[in-house]
Image (cartoon, rainbow, N blue to C red; front, side):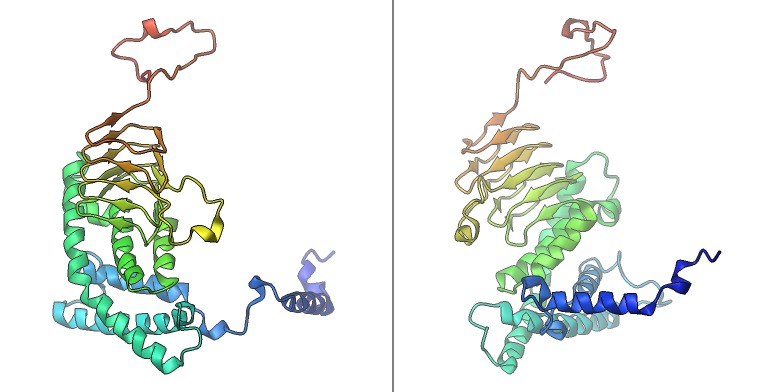
Length: 322
C-alpha cells in the first residue's frame, strides 16, 4: 500500500481548488484587493530599513561585522544611500493614502516623498540626542543594568523606544502606514505596543515592558518611568472613526512613575507631575501633582489544609498583602 497520498492525488483537485479561490477573489471585498499588488508597501523592506537605521543610530553596536576593516564614513555613506533609496520608494508607494494626494500625478508624489526622506534623515541627530537620554535613564533607573552596552544590546524597552522615536518623526511628516508598520514590528518582537503618534518627552524609561500599551494621542512628559503591563489607553472607542484626531488617551506629566499593571484611560485624564501610580491602579480621571496612588484592602484568601492567616505572616514570608 502506497502511504504517500500526494503521489496519487489527482491534479484536477488542485485545479478545482484554484478555480474556487479565484472565484472567491471576485467578490469585491476589502481583502480581495489585487489591482495595486505591485504598488503596495513591503513590510520586509520596511523591516530592513529599521535594521539599517539601527546601524546608523548605534554605529558601534549593529554594524556589519563581516568586513575586516571598518571606516565609519564609508560605512555610513553606504547605509544612508541605501536607506534613502528604499525609504523614498516606500513613501512613494504609500503616497496615495495621504489626504490630498489621491489623484496627484506620480511625479509630484515622488518629489514630495524625496523631500520627506531627506527631512527625516536630517532629524537623526535629534533622535539620537533623545535616545542618549533614554539610555542614561535606563542605566540610572535599573539596578540590574550593568552597563550601557547591556541596555543597548538586550533591553526590549530601549529597542522599542528607538523604533518609536524614528517612526514618530515619519508620523509628524505625515507619512501614512509606514510608521505603524515600524512600531508594530517592534511590538511583535518585544510585546510593547506604542503608537507612532504618541508624544514622548526626554529621559523615557521602560522597565521590563511586556504588555505595555500606549495609545496614539498619549502625551508623556520628561523623566517618566513605566513598568510592564501598563495601559495608557482610551476610555471608550465606541465612536469608531468619529473619534479620529480626537484626544482619546491620557497625558502623563514630568517625573511620573507608573508601576506594573496600572491602567490610565481617557483623553481628559492628566497625571500630575511627580506622581507615583501603584500597581494595578485603574484611573479614569485626573490626578493632582505629587500624588501617590495605591490600592489597599485587597484580600488574599488561602485554601487547603494549612490554616495560614495574615497574623501568621512574618518578615520572611515570600509574598505580601496589598
